[in-house]
Length: 315
Image (tube, rainbow, N blue to C red; front, side, top):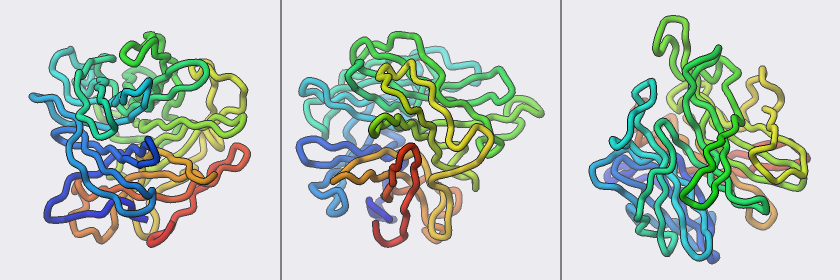
């Protein structure tokens, strides 16, 4: 179901929606060409209002995939953008993770600081009893399935990764292929990104997106681990059902496509995924970036198994 509505005449993209709650109010942050944009509501399911741009850095562009956390009364936003102050990675990519700070959820988020080298995207910042951890995606250019994959690192403070990232989820499927023969013939580029971690009981879940929103096999999947370990760099997550089976929780169906890069919110005991997708008949063109908007569905969590309950016109 659509959560944020589209104004086709004055439209700002709603890709990579990150939902966040503070003080009983809800916020969604989205990717933007010239900065990160925000929406807010008093009710998770209704009356969302567009606020505007809450984070930018002059002279840079393509601000991707924010995540936000509240620590000691401050709000920290982690996102990447095209950064020209560092050497790009081997593939020429400049997307680089930064953190910015604000006094309230609607910003402005300022004091932007680089915390990782290129290529680093798609953060999820997590705090638990063992400390602060950052999930993100980076690139690998060697191996059988080269491409983008997910790692986790401990944060020594909100601005400082420990510098010991641990691989969490790697590409294992042909359905993860973003582009064939990308750098040389026979070497296909894979993409695993959009990490979101949560815990329910003894089960730890790490959800992710595979492939590209313009491809028919683009999807949300998950890995899991049953353990009482709380140091997230030490947990061994295993893809469900296994490394060799394409088993999306969310993928294209009869009424929407490009379903991916989500975040999660728990309300009244029920988990919900907020994700981007686009209608087949949205009228914005099959290749239009701005066709994606934020949607919501139930995610049922049952002893290590996640299932989506998705409808076109209701939750």
